[in-house]
Image 1: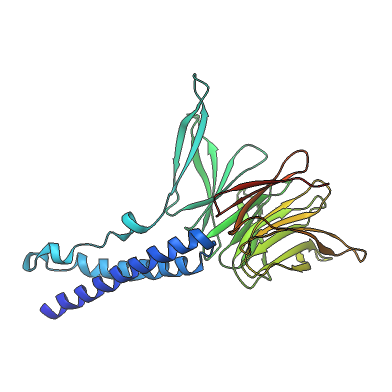
Image 2: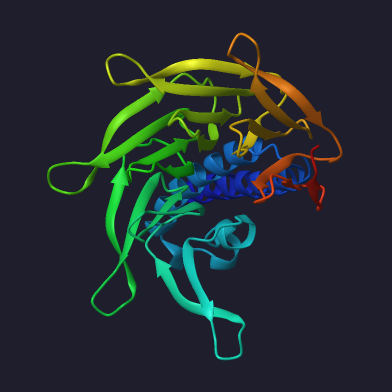
Amino acid sequence: MFSKCEQIKTEYEDIETLKQEFDLAYQKAMETGDLVEAKRLKAELEKKSDALEEKLLAFEWERYDRRALQKVEYKEKYQVKETTIKVWEKGKDGTYQVKETLEGHTDSVNILQVLPDGRIVSGSDDKTIKVWEKGKDGTYQVKETLEGHTDSVNILQVLPDGRIVSGSYDKTIKIWEKGEDGKYQVKETLEGHTDSVWTLQVLPNGRIVSGSYDKTIKIWEKGEDGKYQVKETLEGHNYAVFTLQVLPDGRIVSGSGDKTIKVWGKGEDGTYQVKETLEGHTYSVWTLQVLPDGRIVSGSYDHTIKVWDGE
């Protein structure tokens, strides 16, 4: 029994060391936008702590000092994690207040979209997509849980016809459409990226655009067989592509961990080429939006938001 006690002590100390490594990796990720190492350590922590928890549950605690072998609580202390969705509406004073808190995911919620019929779609680190609709009592409830990805769901888009497009840490893109039973099913799985998919957009002509940690942007269009295929691969960034937007004229805008924003337009040969590289941020560009007048808004880990005005 003493040997088991010593083994658990050793495993506990290993986890404590991993906690410190995760904390440092997370701080670094906040500065650089590089979440790969933090995610790897998170997965290793979960695996080791789950194995240790099983031993702790079966351990004869009455024979030892519990304070020396307490249960690991790293999730509460170190893991930045929010599993809920909140719906906010204006109160009588004109300020937004929480109307509902939606609970159902078991890990961080990364992305939200709204279907044409008003239902909410969410993607999570728990590898699932959930569709939420209002019940008879007027509150949102989980209508469907879509399972198919083997890792975190990072990004969602909704096609004009109501189909859902999802991008994942598992390097794939999935297209979900309603089956005969009215429930969403995987229609296609698009494979081509060599690392996690972080961002998606839809062009006016219906093509899908994806950005990945593999530093590339891919444009997907339907082939003669009706299935999506890679039409173009855009290369120019030297770090992960975290965010994409489409300008009113169809040009593509990308933001990257290389601190730059690139504007891509069609060249004489009909393929997309870099038309401009916007420099100004000092850390990763994490999010982009396009204002109604065509100006670009960017958000970065350098704590700033920049508005870019073209000619």
